[in-house]
Image 1 (cartoon, rainbow, N blue to C red):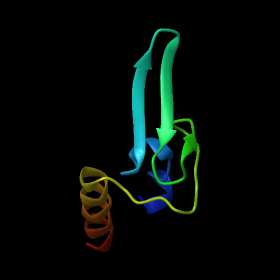
Image 2 (image 1 turned 180 degrees about the vertical axis):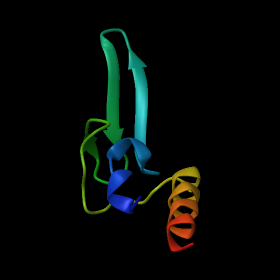
Image 3 (image 1 turned 30 degrees about the vertical axis):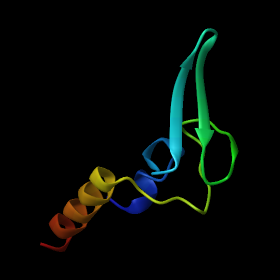
Length: 63
């Protein structure tokens, strides 16, 4: 499994979800505008637990 399998806004450290009266609001703190959990941008920085999972899967693939 590679990085591309995890590369979505919801797995990025800059992704912020907030519950509102009319549903959920999703926002990218880095880009400064609204986004969706499944969107992808080149500035993606994975959350710590996602990076650990990517590293683990890469190690398993090498073996």
